[in-house]
Image (cartoon, rainbow, N blue to C red; front, side):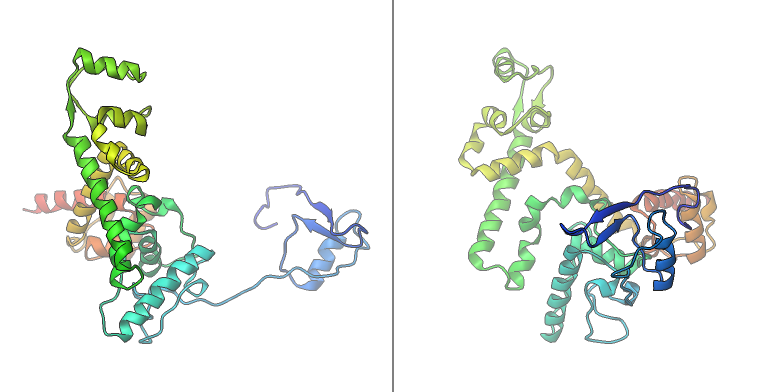
Length: 343
């Protein structure tokens, strides 16, 4: 009732649990209240005044480690050599637990061997986003890894996982030499194809426009690259091969990848530029006593958090829960203005 105090009614569904109908499950009445309260609640429902409760509802409560007490390796800051993974870090979900488990295990093994730890960046893997969110921002509720949490998700496509992370797998001995050579060859072929699309140019002559019209495509009006052409929604692999037949020599999955890379090339380049820019200016200092309330592009909540924490750098600001890359970019602009005015 405390959650839906404005509601005057709530649907319950009585579901028989057997052919004999000796037990029923009340769908819509999940609870973990004390038995005496549950009994009184059930008997308050019209038609259930004399119902007998066979099994009371329950909930599981568990403690967890504040993930901000962990390093990016998932080793605890207070106890050297102790690595945590899964629900104990405040997460929920099988994939989240598995992702942390493999990273904690890898880093524990590397530590024992006296080797450098493996820390994946937010632009390299969803695992990197998951762990970075946890250890820098913490969580107030069970954390799930949603794609919306990754600001560079265009780079984190599942079909590119091997080319992004293969080098780490090979260095750790998880991928043999033969498989790694296949991954490197795939990466080289995709990059070659993407570059070929960018370098191949077409003029709006009669012959080429006739080819486009035979594919039900609009004719060219200006000089265009193959990359610009395949960015059209209607362009598929077969059409791509008609305008750049040199790509025929590659395997089907390579052709598909080249098509995808070509379609999203401009967006990928933009995100890559953002990553380079972000890494560069996260080191920028925030002037002491900076008035965050003057930054009109920030929400009141973000302004209050920044004022409360008073981060010394943009990197420190980025580590505050709820501070997005977009907020950092806006803050960066205002810091530049403040520094310029102070001169």
